[in-house]
Length: 172
Image 1: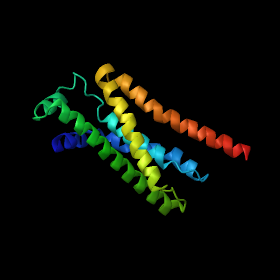
Image 2 (image 1 turned 135 degrees about the horizontal axis):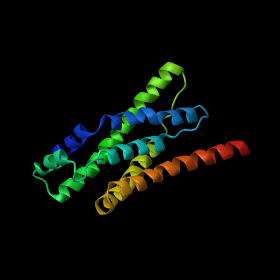
Image 3 (image 1 turned 90 degrees about the vertical axis):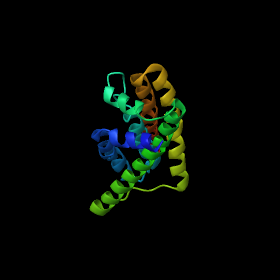
Image 4 (image 1 turned 180 degrees about the vertical axis):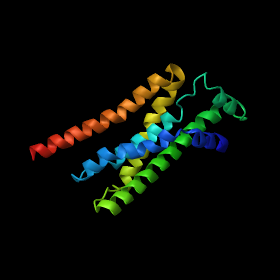
């Protein structure tokens, strides 16, 4: 299983690792209003990394298929490794959030909140729930359908929470 985790870590494209930098701006602007979106940010980035690590793993990706077939693993080991990798991606997204929050607080004297332990546990649970939807869809319908569905759920959640927060602030 360690080899499969290392394969996911090493074959992730550079854009997958740079995505949290592009995605932090909406959260930074929202944090100026006192709203804390760590649950959505860490969840969405971890889902992005999990989904994007599977990008290009179609039949045309012969190098990736040779790499997978060279490991002495069963289907059960492969699925377990994918869920362990989801935990790894969640940790990387939490570390990226922490690093970016520290840099923002250092440079601008504004802070991005850490939330509570409950918000971090909720983020981890939401990540696993959505990833558990992604992999069955991925194996049945393919990458495009699975990625569109699983990336759309948290995006709609983010926009819904942002919209309701803005509407609530306008009513007060």
